[in-house]
Figure: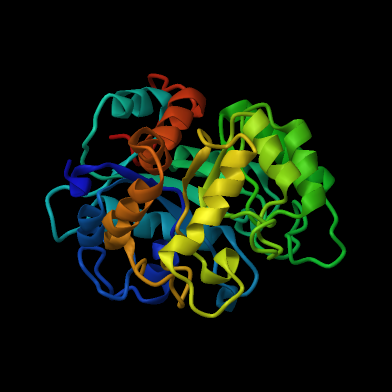
Length: 333
């Protein structure tokens, strides 16, 4: 069994934001990028979610900033001038069903939106993002915006009326929802309103590491009950309160999520390129084989394959929107 031949899906990285701030970087092999094409191949990453996140240095989020990162994705990630073929973009349920049948595949990308600040409370912009290839959105980053409160907002409010309209439109057009960064009240309001199973793209267990960004047990159970997914994240301070964090420190989070019924709902959500400090041994996307080796020392191969690939691709094969002839997108040609 060659671990390097395994397929991996990672549901969160911030490579696009880093490319936005440093446009001179090449997605091909720039060492400043935790996730680049070379490291995706080294790590066996067959599906990488690329988050559109607007750095705070940009000031108030604008739709032009969102469009700018989508254009970066198109030019740098999907159609790099340095190679004849780049990352393919996953858009439709039928594509994910086909990927379920393959143990190895060329790299695919999934575009997500981390916080809707840049949509400027204009729901037509949400539909434009869908047409541009975005398939998953998180309503907030850490703070409040026009749609909801983030988890760091002290008042801890939930969804605004406009945010409730946003969730309804997501249900209607087939946009999947992400609750990482959302306030607790917002989590439960979204859970009541979401018609499709939702995800937490990069959050660990609060019971194991009591960081506000991690999920409480009842939140984990709610995601599991709805057949959603939870992305195990490699942010060191979400893993363990001590300074130095090892890969083995991820295991208690896995145990806790599994104990709450989440063995078939767990996935990976690294947050590569969004963190400066790393879990030792997990410094970039090419390190996934090291993590796989550790997981196989403790868990059955079937479970490990599910966490790395199967659980994600099964979810997308059931809950992405169905492709329709005549639907335009810059990314499906």
